[in-house]
Each structure stands twice: as structure tokens, then as C-alpha cells.
Length: 160
Image (cartoon, rainbow, N blue to C red; front, side, top):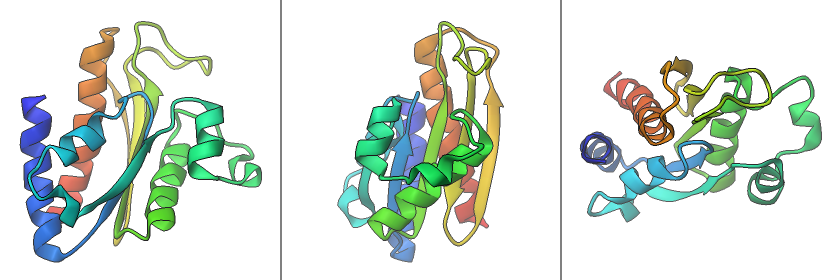
């Protein structure tokens, strides 16, 4: 968690300096993105909220994404990750939305993705999406890697 907290401190400092806000929709990282961002003293200056969108029911109840928006799209994909990031940003009125959707393990998901597969995205002044394949079935390590990957994508965007 120390690596995540150090990354979050850097992100938090940059967001505070810019007066920008962030919102989170994450899945198989299990809340680690939010936990890291909230571990930074003064996080209320930039963190607006987040959700662990782990199931289809959670997606309906927490994101209010219309069914039509999901047509032809599956979870654990780059288009879905970008939709989650955009939805977080829009619903919270944030500058940035960040998301993660994947299969932490020890087995893969119902879409045929192996354990250690995730897609992360950011939406804001710039948008970016990235697929991460750890090649590991270690659930806890994958969760940390997924959160770090999402936050690293945001850190690079903030560095411009």
C-alpha cells in the first residue's frame, strides 16, 4: 500500500495545486484507488467520491449508466473502462474521472480474460485508456497493480 500512497500523494499535490477534482469508479481493485487517494491529508480538497462497481447490480445502482450505453460493450474492456471514467467525471462534476475494470484472480472472468487482466482509464482534459496484463493469479498483488496502473496513467496525464 505504501507504493499506492506515495503515488496518491503526488497526484493529490498536483490536483490541489491546480484546483482540480477527481471521482472514481473501480471494480477489481476493490476500492484501493479511492483508499490511496483518501490516504493523503487534505484529500477533501480534490476527492469528490467513488464507487466499487463490482457487479452488474452495483453498476445499475451506483452509476446509473443507461442500458443503451452498454450495447455491444462488455466489462473488462477498454471501451467499458472509458465509459466508467467518463461517468464518474460527469456524475460528480469532477475535472477527472478514473476507472478500473478487470479480473483480479485467482481465476479469469466470464469473458475469457485471464486473472491479472484489467483495463484502466482516465477522463478529463485528456482521455486515456490502457490494458494491463500482469500474468499473475495472485489476487491481492493484482489488485494493487491495477490500482497503481490506473493512478500512474493519471499521474502521467497530470505531468502533461
